[in-house]
Length: 159
Image (cartoon, rainbow, N blue to C red):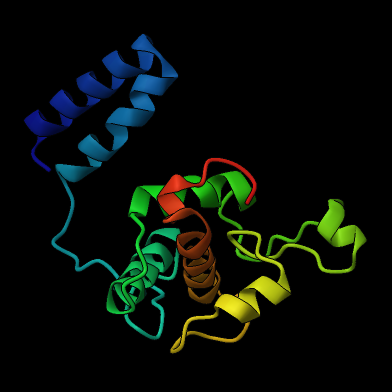
């Protein structure tokens, strides 16, 4: 780096450091960028579902919606998301061990807290038979909600 650029960088760093540590930390990537090489970033691997959706809540909901569309099961992203967050906070392995279902030996499980008999009765062909599988859980729960309430969008509490 030429001497003039080093002096400007030093002055900028000194000014930011005097202004506060937070500002200096935020500026460090900018300072380093003046002398950065054109190195290629390392490839990152994004986990996906077998159907190619991101293996996270967003992907599980989108994959479920695609299946629901094929099977004419009503529901929207927002309706599913709202209920998932209320029921399990987005944890596909959530299990309720304290309510009346649990006391009866059939605890609610998964993203939308479905009991095994309901999951089995409203299971949607083409999805896993594992109640903890996020896509299968969402799709079965939405199928149940459609039959009972018209749509998961009409569910605003425990169902």
